[in-house]
Length: 385
Image (cartoon, rainbow, N blue to C red; front, side, top):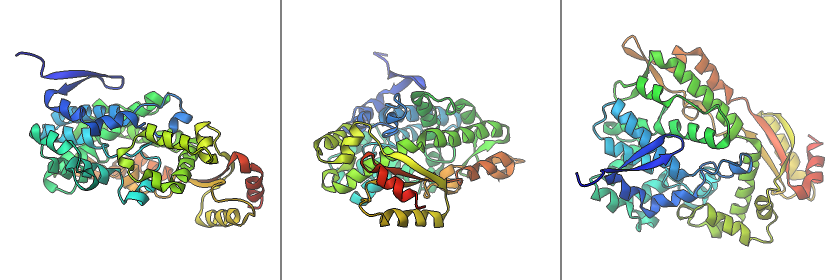
């Protein structure tokens, strides 16, 4: 053999990762390289200074775990599931998930739809190099899209590996986010999960002996959401950025071709925008009121804040944590099945603990925060609640 058939990338989370020769061109594509400049956790680094890891390294780690998972499940189309894992985040806009809802308002696409268009080279992404790059190594871009969409029954197993109740995406990001944020609760046993996962009736289920490991992963997930992903200060920075984006939509018409430095540059050019300047200086809105959530209370708070004289709607934030849209077994990812007595059983029936964990994220609070220049007025308004 003239030379190695792979290269090595040193990953601080997964160790040395082998990059097969047919994947090197995909990794070197401009579309995937853009992810080097998009932080995985948006503005979380304003709370956890080490959270500067990117979607690029996460994509490499996810591809690596897809390789391990494929071998454990004897997957024939290993290259296909590895390509889908590698490209699953290629459509992320700046700051990742932080303001994806606003970018959807502007473009009509979320990061998955944008990623599918980039992989397919369609619409505004006709320039994408990925279709040709994939075809050159014998991978059909349409098959990659089908795996990511999860709408092809013939590829269901592969789809569940990349995006399912227990998937390679989460097995990488929980560990990676925990490491870079300096917290311990995300250190899950990914090898154990891969070893106790089996194929069953065109799905992936967990052997009964793996319930304990699965419980630990779900507990880690809940703790990471509470400690990192829904941290009140991170949420404040995220919503502040959203205020700026909404007021300057014309500057963000092509978010899926942008990266974090592009967005930060725009913030720097908005010299007269108080919120943009406050974000750059980390002079963030301050929490003033925290109360248990119920719909009537939320409506009352919003009406009270809106009626306060001399208070603009961008001078305060009314946030619900966890967010209202974050609900259901699909979002909490507790819709997994356990192989028991030859049949598949809902995980909540096999583990009362997991059934209780599903309810944990339904415990919400309303937090009202005020801009530094409007603290007194916001405090006065909340005093009437």
